[in-house]
Image (cartoon, rainbow, N blue to C red):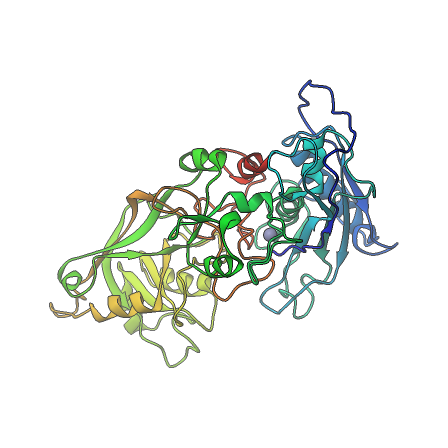
Length: 476
Ligand SMILES: [Zn+2]
């Protein structure tokens, strides 16, 4: 998911007269949806629809609006502001390929610095947050605080073909995309889950840091973004797991929300010829690592003549005999992860290691298939080669390398050595995704990761999710 950064910088004079809201704490905020679609399309799509998952709308457009209202109510019950939050929203074409799509994009429409109530001086705040902190409408050009777009092409040819937004309110989306989760994510950006500083060029907007930048730490140089040069920000944006969020709210909540880091431990003869401990990326499907002990011999799956890629077709007798009761080692590529893992499961494997087919930073295994019952993990190309080389068959037909899929006793997934959550920092830089999302290695999966995960709930709060904690860190 991406978001637009289209802020119009409005700097208010510090001396602006104002009257703050009464001191009584409000328990909620009012969120108003401004449907910006033309008649007949997007939120006004009149195509008949069958009520689904608690959504009683009878047209596609009505169901989309009901889902939006549902998501707005969840946020409205979470954040507090005396000023109504207006979201301008429309369906329109966004970036697509046959296998991927930008689901939505959202951001603040205006930003403000140095207003009465701003916690930090000389610092940019998103419109909705500035209104909350100021206690009244802050802009002299009053308009929606958030602009949000949703992809009108999803499911069409060459746009994640065959999927659609699930419009039910119960998260029971199956293999489709949960629209309520998408809405919650994009609203999170609009409320302030974004920096206005470019990680691509390092430039601050109008020479001001964003409040975000006060909490973003390069964990190798120990410098905050707010104190860095532009060049240092560019460099830090590309460090794998190199940018940590230092906010006290998020950091205190990390152990309550995120689980231990999954890892692969090698034991037995083969382990002597390779490192014994490997970092792994977890799968979005199948049982979580650590939910049950999985220990077994590792067996490499041979490329079959009838298969266009590793483990992409049902296993032949030789591969079946090789992996039965064992952990299958396969290569990434050609077909989806769930296809490979399902083929291995059908052949009797008890787990799967997917070795990357390109040199890249470790990431997880995406996909959904509720029929998968064995755990799967991903390793880097280099680690896959090392594990493969350790399968030396010293005892006839056994590989000699036993793998154990387990949880670390010291490390928390998605965090640095001091258990601070890390942000998404791929190389090359991804405009709209880098820096302004949590790292994809966080487990459980977080709403504010750059790509939607199938197992998301609709919670924004501890012990499920760290979205609201971050917003509290920046002033909500
Ligand atoms: Zn996003």
